[in-house]
Amino acid sequence: MKSNLKTGLFIFIVIFLFSSIFLSSFAAEKQYTIYVVVHGGIADPFWKVVEKGALDAGDLYDDLKVIYTGPAVFKLEEFMSYVEAALASEPDALVVTLTAPVAMDETLRAEIAKGLPVVAINAPDLRDPEDRIPVLTYVGEDSYFIGVKAAQETLARFTPKRAIFANHHPGATNIEARGRGYIDTMKAKGVIVESLDVTEDAVKGAEVVAAYLRTYPETDAIFSSNTLRTETIIPRLEDDGIKVGVDVKIAQMDSSPKILEYIQEGKVMFTMDQQQYLQGYLGVIFAYLSAKYGYIPPPAPVSTGPATITAEDIPSLVDLVKEGYR
Image 1 (cartoon, helix red, strand yellow):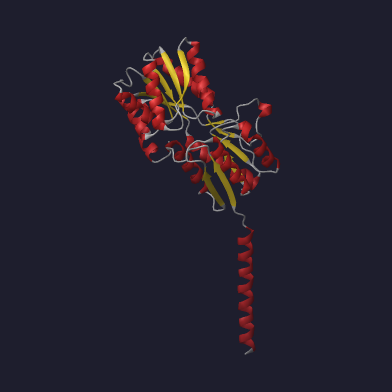
Image 2 (cartoon, rainbow, N blue to C red):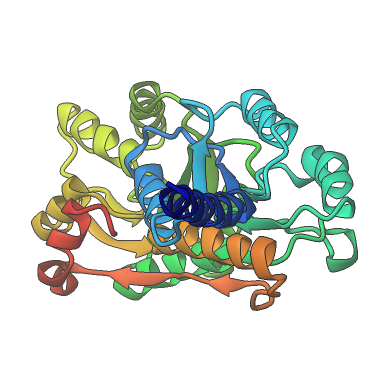
């Protein structure tokens, strides 16, 4: 009897000790939450690639939860509300587009001062260095240079009579910088060029471009800064009898299956690729490693582009675009 009691007590103690060790180790394992807030819209094919990169990075670590969020369409006020909501949840780190640095400055500085790791992606703070929000780093494009490169690639093919930059996000500093790069480079070569507000609505934007070409029929070059805009602009111009790729030549930003088709058909000259998957992926990796281990990421900018995609490059990219990596 005593032997049985001793055996039972021993088994109980062993089970208790192992249970305690297991539960204490389980409780001690911290779970990290990182918010990724983008200016969107998050259903846009471009941003779905960023989302895939961010979530793929999150899947690498068992102790990491990534929450990807932002407005359905670009509206600065809504974007700011998403940033504030993310911060209110007290995440372990924040990955965010610095779409409107002046408006975001006070809020982000306060959180950074409390020790929150913040990584900027896609849209940097383009103010003077001493005025910039002190994020850990920035992962993404050099917006002005992309505009310059788009103009240079166009000018290498022909000299336009008149050109436009189709701005789909008026007020977004990175998009406006992209337009300035394009316009400055075109003007330096004597080309008449301006920025055209094509609104947040792709269908309305196509109408705006069609109306502009009716007013200025000599317009023969467009730099379109968004895939959805180009995918609506081209059929709209063709409805007016314009031969896209002949009468009007389009330089593009970013990729989609349809954009690759347009390049193969000669309707789009080329597209500038900022490899946005890397923006989501590296943004989360840098934020996580900083939050968990205190690592300092490479200094800004961690450039993800641009690369220029032409018809010769498409065979190697078709599957990657379909799979959501490019």
